[in-house]
Image (cartoon, rainbow, N blue to C red; front, side, top):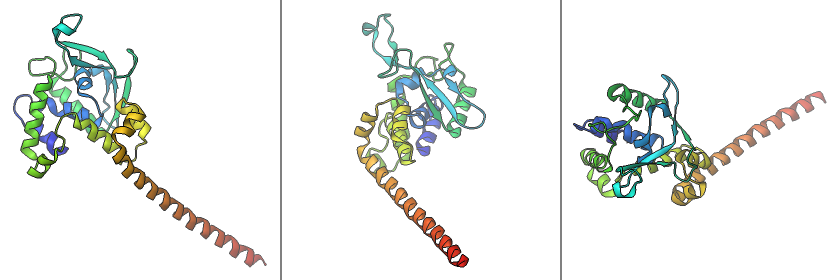
Length: 230
C-alpha cells in the first residue's frame, strides 16, 4: 500500500490532502463516510506510541431533496449502532505521525473536521475516487491492474481488516474495530480465515511439541535425581 499512498501524495492539487484520508481506511478500517466525518477532537495522537480514533458517525451525500434541512450532505450515526455510540479504533505509531503531519500542514475546518477539499468543503467521492484511480495507474504493474488490486478506495478497508487477521488479531477484536458483527466478518473473510486457522493450528502444534520436549526433559531430570538418591 505504501506505493499507492506515495502516488496519491505526489499528485498535484488534491493529492496531498488525501494521503492520510486513504490511510484512515487502511490503518483504521474506516468507511469513507467515517473518514469524511472525522474531527480533531475524536483523535488522540500522542508524539510516541499508538494513537486512538473515537469514531461517532459518517457524512453521506444524500441530495437536497432527501434531507430534512435541504443540505446535500447528512451526518449519520455509526452503522448498526445507537445514535450516541462511539467506536474506538487504535492506530499504529506510523500512522499517528502521518495524521499529525497532515493536520500540521492543512489544519482543520472551523467545525473541526480533519479532512477537507481545497475549498474547505466536504471531500466528495468522485474526487477521491479519481485520485485513487490515477495512483493505481501510476504505480501498479499491468498484472496488478488486471487483477483488480485495491481497485476501489473502499478496498483499503478490506485490506486493513485482512492484515489484522493475518497478523493474528482475534476475529472478534477485528470485527469490533471495523464496526461490524462477527457474523459479517466470518461471511466476508471466510476464505482468508481458513488460511489464518491453518496458521493458528501450526502454531498450536508447534507449542504442543515444544511443551512435550520440555515436559520430557523435566521428567528425565527428575528420574535421574531419584536414581542418584538410591
